[in-house]
Image (cartoon, rainbow, N blue to C red; front, side):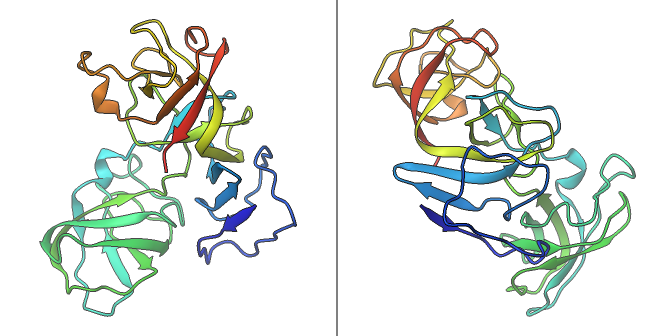
Length: 260
């Protein structure tokens, strides 16, 4: 096993045993979000479930960005600064809990300094419509002023089973049933069991698959002739054909995942 742990100053201690169980779940955080576990041909990422619980073999997606976190007012900073002020749009709706954006990103979309991104290290609780300070891992590279910026949560923060069709970036498959708000490992690469939707175009072994447009958490065959399917992006290759998932908890297929 190879374990790659990203820096996380908000996690007091990371204890690593000789072997890490990719099927384990827990109510408390053991590793920084996005920690990478390589086990033979398989790759896993450490993640936090979003609060609804997810069944085994389901393709999941990242948290959908809030509209009030996109293209919002951002303060000015000088080269070398390690903080940036950000104002969520609306009180209550767009409030941020302390360190909710930790390990996520802030993107500068407009104004002086546009085109840059910075990884968020920490921040206090921020109320919508009130400016709050984001502490960054890396210093500001381009002096900023008159900014409009977007903040994004860590890709593996509060993931959810992908709706059909998905509404955010696919982030991995559950390899065990995950309790609501528990931490777990999502598989992103290598052979795995996956919910299969064969209700539309026939699923064919050896062909690429995409997130299903009909069954939540399932994959279906990539069919360029169907307008909604190519837009979702290929997530793997069909190794063995299962029956129609019909919304979940039915027969599974075998997929070679290729999310990284």
